Length: 412
Image (cartoon, rainbow, N blue to C red):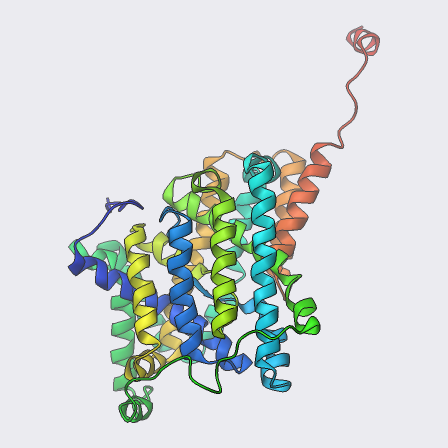
């Protein structure tokens, strides 16, 4: 049986560094995709994700092994203000407002405590929510793999076989080894473009916060109104990710270190991103998938990943090398990562012994699955909200208790 590496466990440096690099490979594509789509600087996005993750780990006392990368929820708003209106300062005021919403919620949760979360989100809600976090992402993974199914399938098979049958240290870095194997095969078939890597050596070092790609926030009411409300959506998605992490690590992160610290860490990280020109950051499902596959939960590895991201933001050739990984290679890996998250949600339902002979449970789970998979935007957040509300309504909409005389009549 594969050994589980606990959250507080410290592995030797020779093992921890490759494990940190593995997390970098998992988050890199999504983290730099957001700035490419919105007109922000990819180097600053890497810098803000690395700094943000370190802040998050500090606030959560390294008890939540989560990596924070660029959030997809704000792509439309950022594109409008950065790429269309060329108003970077205004866009950053919107990012700062997102961080402030997080801080306000932190104060609220700190005031009323976290006990209510488990009451509002029992296993019949949290299980399907965890499942759809993975399942809602699988179309993205499949579309990446569809660029070349042969390369994607080869990468997937190598990763899966290594995660099951590899021995020793190779067993805990199957994603990294799978990506390397897929990259080599893709290179042999002519799918890797080495020209950008060669060109990057002309300017090997870059300073992310350079003129033209960075601006201090400048208050813009339209940007604030466009982004601040979305914070409520991403907070709910964060809650789902914490349920996933709690499940796979067999801990209760809602209580320890507390969801209030999770919200505070994410809020402060997003505030920092707004002041250095980056997009809002959020916990990443890709890295949670790495934890689920490898069963190596050590927060120390996330620290190393954050440091590597900061280094990457300054080193052009390293950025170019990772950017040269063909899409189907990452597609093959992410099919496994997202699928593992989906399976983790089903495990929650099994371990909690949720009774689906009970019509209420069946309806709640069905609605969460349908909305989570069917809705195009922020499906996890809307499905979670619908599940919480529906469970509460159904749980409190039962018939009133029968009076004693009615019970006597029924007995006769």
